[in-house]
Structures are given as C-alpha cells and as structure tokens.
Length: 273
Image (cartoon, rainbow, N blue to C red; front, side, top):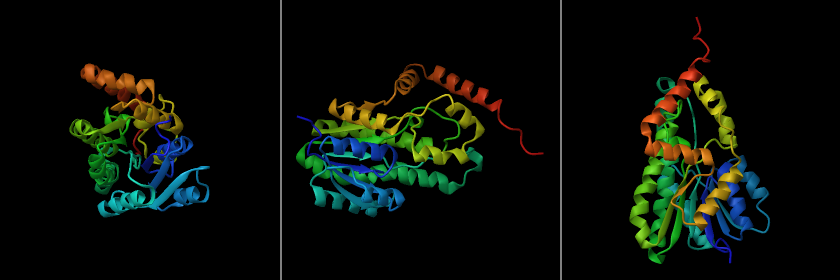
C-alpha cells in the first residue's frame, strides 16, 4: 500500500516552486493536501487549476506572522483532518553584498525562512505527540550547509532551519515523530529567477558552475526520504558530496569556497570612476 495514500499533508509555499511540485507529487499518490501560501497570482492559478482528482484545501497566509500561520494550519486540520505530514517550503532569497543590503532584508529572511518554519511546526507538533506519529520536513538549502558568497541574509536563515531540525529531531524521535531537513542546491523556480537582478557578480559566476535542478527532483527526493525515514535529504549528488566534505574536512571546504570566490572576483566589473 502506498504510504502517502489518504494521509493529510500540509505544504507551506505550496503554490509555486518546490512546494507546488511536492503538492502535485503528493496528490498523485492519493494524499489529501492542504496548501498554505501568500494570496497572490500563484495561489489564484492553483485555485483555478487544482491538481486533477485531488482532495485539497487552500489557505492564504503569511507564515512569518505567528498568529496567521497558526490559524491557517488549524483551519487546514479542521478541513482535512489531523496533519500526518508537514512540509515547510515557504521561503525567500535575496542575494547581495553584505554592506549594501538594508537591515530589513536580513530581518525578513529570518521572519519568513526560519520563523515561518518554526510557527507551523509548533502548531502541528502537539497533535502529533498525542497521536505518537507524524512527519515534519523542513526545506533548507545548500546555503544552510556552506558559506556561499552573496547570501549573508539568506544563508543564516537556512542555517537556523538546519539547527532547528537537528535539535527537535533528537527530542521528538523517541516520541514517534520523524523530522527531516532538505538541502537543495539551485532549483529552477521563479524564486531563482527573481534573484538574478540582485546577485553580485561573484555569486553569479559561482552559481554558473551549478546547473539548476528541476523542482520535481526535489519533490521526488522528499517523498523518497519520507518513505525511508531519512533525517537528511539531499536531492542531488553534488550537495551530498559537499555536505560530507564540510563535515569531514572543513578546512578544505573553506579553501574550496575561497578559491571559487577568488576566481569569480577576477571577472567583477571595475567600480565606476
């Protein structure tokens, strides 16, 4: 029997990118799916053209706002039953040079990427504990594993997601709850395209060495990781290799990133006269 059939999955950021790909994969496997996303054209498009033959529920909410996030998750549970699987895929990424980015950019990354993940997890955990079962999957990033030039606002927020899952995994595993964290590299999504105008030249050069993977590849990795109860999910082999290298040879990892930055800086346009 398919382990996803008739479960209730709640997916934040489920109207585009990795979240939408995960929604479609879950719906195709027979899950009841709740989608929480901003009230924007992406959500309107999903409302007009839902996954075929799917049982789904839509909630418009900004997960960075605690009460709004908690109320949205609660309404999802009221509509489709207890949450068996939570996937937190809502997030933003705004690259730039550290000294030049406004303070509010740093705050907004923590509010959406970290706190938006935290508030939703905090809402589903009590019922999961009462039932002694459930799965939580948080989407982080390769930038939550390695220091990537130009992501001084984004990277720390994803390190925070990584730290949260590492800690609560230890606490919740004995009580029947599986906690996983996903570390995708660049993914071919509207968010990645939206980063382009803000990328420093060094970031653009470094990223150019990595071919973006399709969001469906990440979604497949998530479902595979949940099925196998993996605590860490790497959607592509290069990220797995870099993660292992950073753990076993941190000095080499720093050298690797410094060299990549040095090579990229050679192509940085000179400052205006």
